[in-house]
Length: 311
Image (cartoon, rainbow, N blue to C red; front, side, top):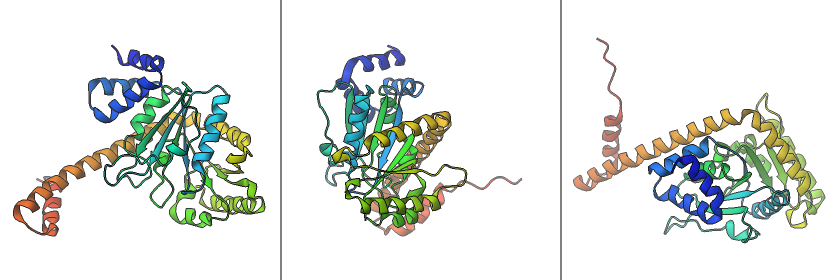
């Protein structure tokens, strides 16, 4: 079976087949069948990826449910990657976001998968990129919901075609976003709980000011919209703005995805090299019963490349 035919079988096999394929990505990432399937999916990016990020409590899951419902009413197929906090005991996803999504489990054109962030401080999981590549070849829209926003949680730009930042009224987050560099990442921003009225409008103005300061030269300033997902207020304008941003991003999609792939490759190579070096150091410490400090210095010296021959 060719990789392309495997992709076609996935399209025809429904959600169960997609779930098995994603499990295979995690269980056997280096298997020839897995690599062939990912290669075929990389060449066939049929859909667009939207990253949804924002602080805990902002209402990301409620907003995600509203966007998913709107896309489905438009006839688009949708996949959701919900990056959840990790269990310290098992390392698995705690399913904090997935359980709050109001979705129809009988909908064959809607697929949801939770991924554990584990030790990734950037708010996304290492499996996200290969999973996204596969889902992007199978669905019209892939929504990536992160665990939250903090000073290191800006890696969503390394996955999504368009990033939507959600902010809640009267939270004081705008200044924190400037400090953390988060105001530089969105293509679009939304103030949630717009039914609060003047408080939400004031937060929108504060966010607009923060984005005006943070937007790099030559890049369009992200628009700020107001929405109340629980009341259905502002969802249609937000969806229109998202679709416009997706169309605008299409012109540079190939170059951006190539850059994302390079950053993922660099991160995975660095992580694997670090794991191997840590294993070597731990073995030495255990054998010699020594403190870690000299061992680290010795190991770093061994990893240093030899000086170039000047002769």
